[in-house]
Amino acid sequence: MKKEQIFSFFILVITLGIAFYFYPLLPDQVASHWNSLGEVDGYMSKFWGLFLLPLIMVFVNILLFFVPKIDPKRSNIEKFEGTFGSFIIIFNLFMLYIYSLTIAWNMGYPMDMNVAIIPAMAALFFYTGILVGKAKRNYMIGIRTPWTLDNDIVWDKTHRKGEKVFKLTAILTLFGLFFGEYAFLFLFIPLVVGVIYLIIYSYIEHKKLDK
Picture 1: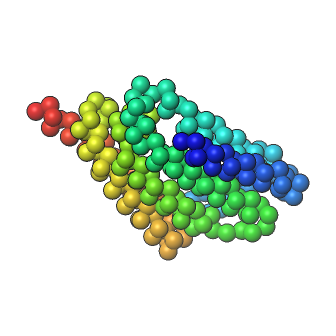
Picture 2: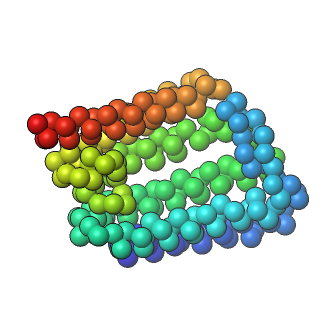
């Protein structure tokens, strides 16, 4: 996964570089959170507004790259290592995009954040579907219910369904582009329904094996 690590490191460096560049240009308090209507409802100091997300990215990358190495089933993770590495890159690009929107807003370029975030959310969830479809049984990555973790057959069946669920969620998310303040619902509702469906599906499939 070395090339993925190098590319991800490059994205992290860019993100930190942006933070240092814009630090002198932004006010002491910056907008940091938007509600479901796309209105600012949270502020923080300039330092944390600029450096919190890059620090979170660094921490998450450490977890994503190194924690799977201690998974008891790490040999299974190696079977889809390339797909997982690409997912980490896409996640970092997603975070960089969100970060850029936040800075643009605070530099005086207001926008409908709910709408602006939709294409990136759709791309992230679509590739999550690809990752889920490739994932083999492990304790770190995938749809980890008691029933998928217990059996390879249940794991594989649930993850094939999961691939479709996440890809469909990505497509439905795009419809939010046409509904302004209700855009978030086109992500939230399909995702919640899909997750509940996958949990129930894995339970039912495990029960079939018991019989």
